[in-house]
Length: 227
Image 1 (cartoon, one colour):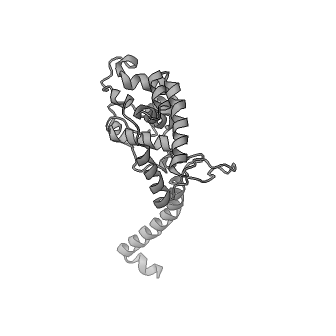
Image 2 (cartoon, one colour):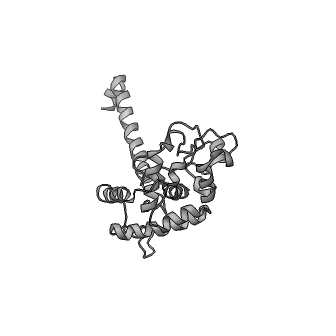
Image 3 (cartoon, one colour):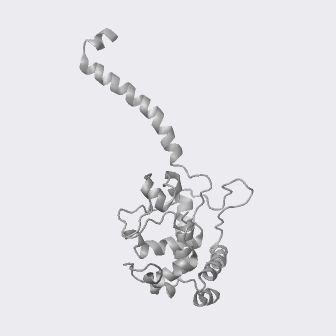
């Protein structure tokens, strides 16, 4: 049989290709499957963070900011550790982006604070002289849509098996509880009050205490999550 293959270069080449391709798949597929799983410590977005992500998409923040740090020294020096597949396990849709009019935001939670974000979104040039980013003052009065965020959480939990209401890290506690809308809403308001206080803006604190979460507070909660 092997003598026949040696006398037929075409079939010999096909056989070599099949063997190498099969060996390659054996090596690549298991690693690819592993890399696509959530990284250790990854958790679903909380209700407030999910609402903030919806604001991020609604106001087209992803048109000017990417969320994908490539494994190049010039990028890791500026933005931090390069991005890993498993970090996006709970992102639907992905917000990798394809253009950087502004900096990449994948690890922005590591080096920006809530008050910095609030000042920046209110008046970008006050913290970044020469910035071409527009102000987003409407976010300081627009009210966050928690109901839509809750509906999205229920959908990804059911359709994509996102582990809400589960003990992900094995410490005996539910990492990101969902429960009923009223329960999730209460947790969102507690979280929102903490973020509002971190912005050092009394108007945002007062708004949360009055039963309304400003979009900017939800957005900041989402940005703080990006680490």
